[in-house]
Length: 305
Ligand code: NCD
Image (cartoon, rainbow, N blue to C red; front, side):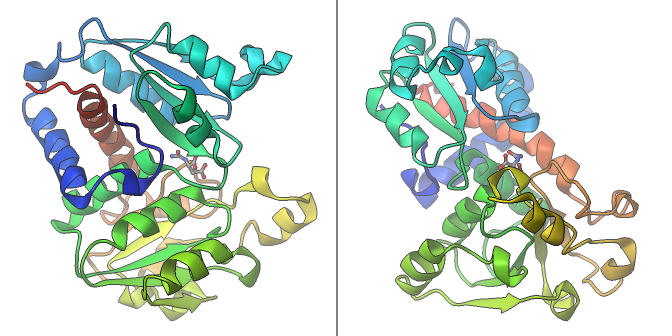
């Protein structure tokens, strides 16, 4: 039985296969409309979500399967003090596959240890978000036609942003990626990524504080929200929340074929005057999230058609 807890749970070849299947599903939707008939996906969301949960549910419904679940910890027995382990043991009696989001780092790993069905990590605290990574890889491949030879800028909250942590790991396995980190000092990548990951694997990256100093070199800019819910105090959040705002004016300095990605939700970090720019990919990215989750669900359930 396979699970998806972190990006390295799949090889590059397996990821390519999932992205290929996502493309295939878009080309021939009818072929897949009953692929998951009589199968049930449970979405267990202990943290807020719009795109991740709804794209998982839309994905399963479009594959002809069923969905059940909860969308907040308050409406589950977690509010009564139930452990993740017991919740998972229970939901495994009702579902064939589980997507779970939880505020605690490592919770998905705990879930996997108690599961008798495939577990998908839909975000564990500030740690990983591997299905957003699949979404991002599919988006880069669709927009750029490749996953190598790219200068990729990550901008904003690189400390708490789990989407950044997972995408960095995934991209490190492709050839010639120039990693550019743009953040205030307080929101730089956590030590375990800088030391245990970049350094140990001999991967170099550049660090900037000002977006303007490097935007002109980028093929991709991955904007992120400052993760308010993971700050220890509100004053720090308020001080840092508007550190970077990408707007039409700054985009004048960028390459004509820059791709602007954002996992969403955005708060202020991308001005709405960017939305109509063809370089803005973030709503296409949200759609890609549904396609890639369809491919992922089929893969983990072992359904080949
Ligand atoms: C992200 C998340 O939950 O980590 N959203 C998402 O899943 N698309 C990013 C965020 O919350 O800022």
